[in-house]
Image (cartoon, rainbow, N blue to C red):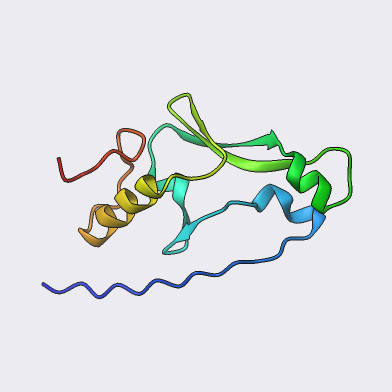
Length: 102
């Protein structure tokens, strides 16, 4: 069975009010963290965003997976989620996106 895969990358400039949506990855209409077991979204202080929005402080979106914090989502996690989706397994992964191929 052949699975066609189409990937579209869309970078969006966010307003100050949208900063909590920064670093959000959507796959098939679902947020990346929805595919990961024990993942939750948190807000972390971000000095670079504070400079961009001209405030003293700002908070950005991060994902915590099994007590590990990711302010920048590792490519390996994205890759492993995509592989599971292509294979038809869209259930939550048991760990931090560990490879389903093992």
